[in-house]
Amino acid sequence: MVSFTPKTSVPFFAEIEMERFTGLDYYRVDELYTDEERLVRNTVRDFVDAEVLPIIEAHHRQGTFPLALIPRLGELGVLGANLQGYGCPGITEVAYGLIMQELERGDSGLRSFASVQGALVMFPIRAFGTEAQKIGWLPRLARGEKVGCFGLTEPDYGSDPGGMVTKAVRRGDHYILNGSKLWITNGTISDVAVVWARTDEGIRGFLVEKGMPGFTAREIEGKFSLRASVTSELIFQDCRIPRENLLPGTAQGLKAAFACLNQARYGIAWGAVGAAMTCYDVALKYAKTRVQFGRPIAGFQLVQQKLVYMLTEITKAQLLCLRLGQLKQAEHVHHTQVSLAKMNNVDKAREIARLAREILGAAGIVDEYPVIRHMLNLETLYTYEGTHDIHTLVLGQDITDLSAFA
Ligand SMILES: Cc1cc2nc3c(=O)[nH]c(=O)nc-3n(C[C@H](O)[C@H](O)[C@H](O)COP(=O)(O)OP(=O)(O)OC[C@H]3O[C@@H](n4cnc5c(N)ncnc54)[C@H](O)[C@@H]3O)c2cc1C
Image (cartoon, rainbow, N blue to C red; front, side, top):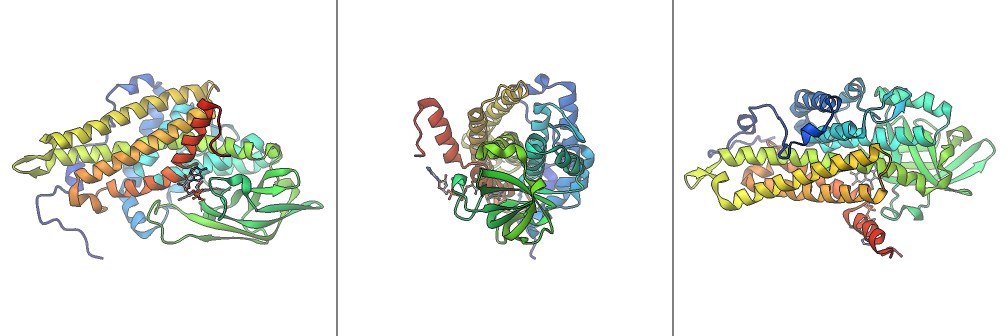
């Protein structure tokens, strides 16, 4: 492969990235975190700097997930970190959010891995599982010894999962599962899949284990977004699932699935801030170093306007996340408040990544800089866990009492 060799005075990423990342904190939000929250954030920040950033571009190019980092995430205690018991540390929601922010500063694929494992697999087992399911899975998932995935989306049912056709039929002490799930993060590397299926008692969640007869998974190729992440199709053909693998607390059907998504969306709202912080950091340093018309481009008013927009939106998003975390910690958070934060922070991060790409000029399209990778990743954030437009309609319904879905 031909490597990128600039012929002009374009600063190398390595040159502008000399100082340690200290974060963007224009409104001194840091002072509002507890000592423990800052410690958790700094620990994950150091891990990302030392172990993620040096390898992530290569994984992104190759379209692979850095599997070797999974046990490290377990050692750091970041998997299901906001859950209590069964090997989970039960840290505050703000500390958990800061973990998501720092992981996504590394790459959205890494944060997605942790989000799926913690919010979409461990959370439903913790909230809706039997004691045996909790004891059997949670400590190993927390340590990163086992990996999980969450299968809700189907080829014909994305934004409208209530129409799902995957079906589980009761046969004595088993269920027989038929159907498929598409766009499933971690699918082919998972030991257990939380799968949502139609039953005679409504939509229920099941733990489908790797190796169960009739269960196969295949990786989706050709992605231009979230390349350092495994995305898969799950296929069930007369898959026999023991009755004890039903999650008993999912009797309320999609309400239980949405409760999981709400946990994950909370992490995405924080994660998007991490991606935006990196883009701003790189763009600012680049603009101060890149000289055109005899002066650094940071001195031009139009460039400053872009940088100030980025600074302003990141600062607003940081404050939104902190308040959302406090509400979640107090168990006073409404799902529409999570929707607003996911919708806004991803939208602004996406715009910030594009502006950073612009500021870098041609250098913005090569992966020597992390900006184009974040820009592409943010397209997935904009779409998954409820698209931007779907969250808009959720909020529209909340404030008008009129549903735009029907
Ligand atoms: C990389 C990646 C990882 C993913 N990981 C997972 C996972 O782990 N588990 C899982 O279950 N799913 C996962 N998903 C799936 C994701 O949640 C869906 O892609 C998402 O819900 C949107 O569904 P869709 O792609 O089918 O789009 P569609 O629902 O077909 O929507 C297409 C467009 O139509 C718009 N639209 C739809 N309905 C309306 C409406 N009523 N009004 C206005 N506009 C509307 C949407 O906003 C969108 O712009 C992942 C997706 C990606 C890309």
